[in-house]
Length: 453
Length: 168
Image 1 (cartoon, each protein chain N blue to C red):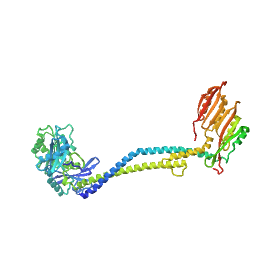
Image 2 (spheres, rainbow over the protein chains, first blue to last red):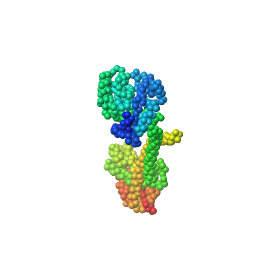
Image 3 (cartoon, chains in turn blue, brown):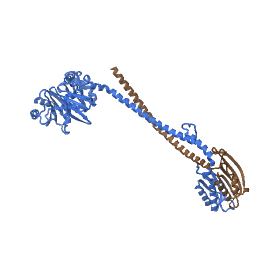
Image 4 (cartoon, rainbow over the protein chains, first blue to last red):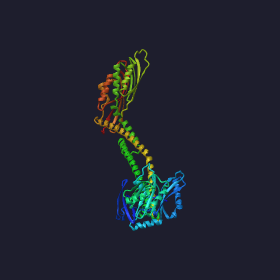
């Protein structure tokens, strides 16, 4: 059993119903997330446009639906035994059928799994396709009539949440009657009749609802769902099955709408019994191409990833190269070296060149950077102003020492402070007073604290 | 069927290889991000340092450009001293001539003064400063005299630059 895949790639679908051998065609077009429906004629389906599918269905009388119960709580494991369970239930071999598992649900006690399957015998499928071919129709999909009717009734007449009253959808055609029973939006079962017989309908309902519910909804559809026919039938049923009765909007095209809509809109109960040996050539071709398409997509993704990385790496390398070129040009300019400088040695080479240059520029720099003359003049001037006696003074561009005498030690400190503001770092200490000397002896140490280069 | 499968195998094979290559390249790129940042940061720091050195070099160039106006040779220090300090107090200790930047030489002269007024020393320093090229005081050692305002002994080292005969 396979989960059937919808024709999600299509944007147009034709739903094909049949009434007395005459096709009823409805065209559905996907517009964004919604569908628009319109009547169609067979000239449109003769040669379908690209991305267009034809969806017909196997009637209930040509197919079957079954609820299967497996005593396995896991739905995945239960799905593997449904095939065997179905084989037991069917009067023919399941190997002679195409089967679709439409959904599973846990049993009431939670120990098992129930599964809804729809299927048809190969010969019925072939017969159907031949019949449609005679009308010039080659559908891509063969849906299941009862499932499509039930699904469409939930879409067009969604049950109110609190409502759990049973619902029966009755399709009235010229050559077939199809009954579908539902409760709380769960498909219960279906039946095909040749004639619209109230008794047969009653028995069908009784089989699904042994205790007659207070309210039963009747939805009438199909080309034969005219007011007169429906009123007559419902009159026979309503006494035993009280409730409501409604003819759907445009009942003659209800099933065709359902088929077209289901072909374009994926849903859990999507069903295509034209599969396996009967698979439509175009679907077969698309299925075959899919692995290649996926492969190409992966190849393209891989190549794109490679490209992005190559571009990124190239850009990073380019940025590094550009920066390196600027660095090298600057190093050559600073070092004045006409020859190339090794990568990583730029600052070192430039520093060496600058150190050499600074050495040779010393005489020029001495004249402009903190002239010693100014410092000497400051010392001599302050000495006079503060009444200091400079006993010895040793001064160079980098350091100096002043030995002196002052009326008060603090006056020596003033000299030191003044020198601090002139680019020197000074320290002042008291000296041992010479014998007989009233003035206080001091020594000032000086260090140049700002090397202008 | 075999004929149909071969292109599929090729496509998926190529897809697998390209995805693997893409993944490996992505890992390589991600690993390289921090390294690239480190490299760029270091180079940016180096550029900043070199830019500082360039400013320094530009300053040197400006000093040399200003020095172009110096005449060839320099006024001897003795000549300057003659106009500012008593001749008998000055003694030339040493003269040192060394090459400087191309086209220039540096001259260092050590002089000793004995029993000299502090003001005279000041005049000598001022005269040296305004000479063309200037004489710059590099070092000095002073010993005060008993008389206020006088220096018992002063040893001074001056330097100047001279344009060599080839010119700059």
